[in-house]
Image (cartoon, rainbow, N blue to C red; front, top):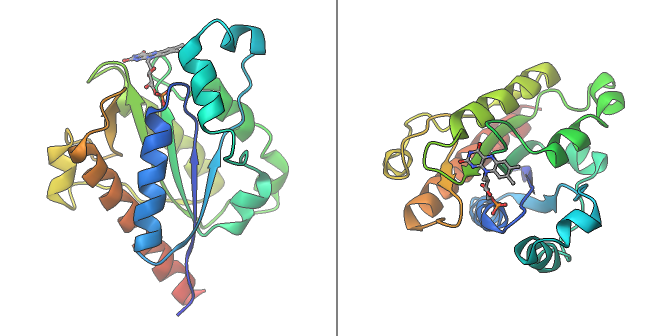
Length: 199
Ligand SMILES: Cc1cc2nc3c(=O)[nH]c(=O)nc-3n(C[C@H](O)[C@H](O)[C@H](O)COP(=O)(O)O)c2cc1C
């Protein structure tokens, strides 16, 4: 059997989405995938980052995680994305990277992947659904396949019930969230496995 390749890519200012990505990577590995864990590069000016200790601390905490590259997107069969909500949309750090993907998109290298996404917000209902839905629009433009969790496992409901992707409250990634993320990651890996089996 061919081993599916899963890319877990995240952006995190304060650590929540870093923890989510770690759990997604762990669950995908456990489900039999080869996994690359990558972060979207920080694009905020250093002078701005340095105004917040929590932001500086998080940058140090994941300094060993490689920045996401075009090669990572080309390499993987499936993508698990995790990022915070910014006013009901994805962070500029994520969009900034995505906007460099025109050439590989035009080469067809972003098509036919399986993709899922999670997000966090400061509030329980601070824009998580809008963020994931707006992000999935890009995935449709790539010609890739969205693997939303739906209500395929009780863990989805126990973590707040967002069928588009697990909704996390910032700084509160608890056992219920962990179980929902693990289910979402296993489900992505399952569909990536089916994809590589028929390739
Ligand atoms: C510029 C900015 C905009 C934000 N907008 C929202 C928002 O609209 N609703 C909300 O609930 N939280 C909002 N937040 C809070 C973030 O979503 C929260 O800090 C993030 O989910 C934490 O994830 P992290 O620990 O991985 O950085 C915002 C934060 C920033 C810095």
